[in-house]
Length: 343
Image 1 (cartoon, helix red, strand yellow):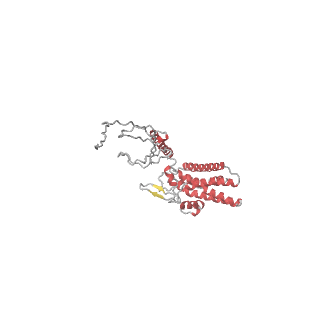
Image 2: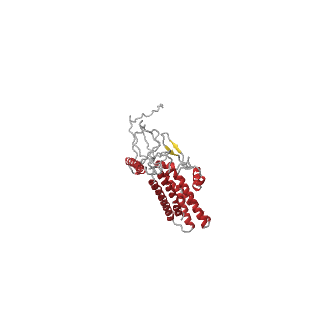
Image 3: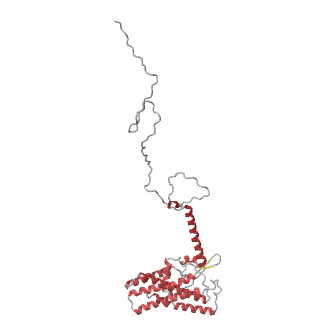
């Protein structure tokens, strides 16, 4: 029997095979391909949200002073513009237009400047606003020594005010810090406030306190200061005394009486007898009268060498009138102080 060799079948496959149909997408979005994958069709299901690592505040910052601090490279500024370290507000966050806000700020600044100019123009001649600060230039030692001077004026020897000659040749009085004879407004103001508080305290001790008592005490004390100020000012006018630039000095001298009034009221809490109380009252009255006689002398009878006023070198007639005016003003203090101590 003859041996027949085995033959493998010849493959009869076509030369080119068609691509198999694409299979439907899986629920996880994965798609199988039988051949090289082509461009992926657009997905219809929502894409997963990507979260950034940057912190986002829960509430947006709407402050007008908010700036972009994350910009590492700010745009170049013009060379002619100065860099300001003050943050410029953005009023747009508040619903206000920036141009309108800038116009309002400029209008407010112009109004304040116009008000200051009006006050200086109309009241600067009567009340020199530039010298108000100088009348508050005091020290602790000055306040203590000045109160001792008001309470014990006979212990003081020299009442002449110190002067300072400027480079232009003008003569000016030194500030209260450097001259104890110079009037100040600090002690009169503090004495005025203390008097009002003591009046309320005195009323509370006698079980008749009411808030209106503070207002009444302040009004009565202010009325006494105004009457005393006008009496000195009008008296200087009739005596031909030049008072320009010394209005604050007159106002200061009108307020020193509250120091003696306060000590008189405090002495009533020591339960002295009526006679001793009036002795204390008359003592502080004479002390205040002597203080005014010595202090107002530099105003009513100025030194001709230190004053540029033509009326400084007065005749004997005007000099006698001014001395009489000083004594009348000193004696009027008993009326003012007696009215103030009746709280």
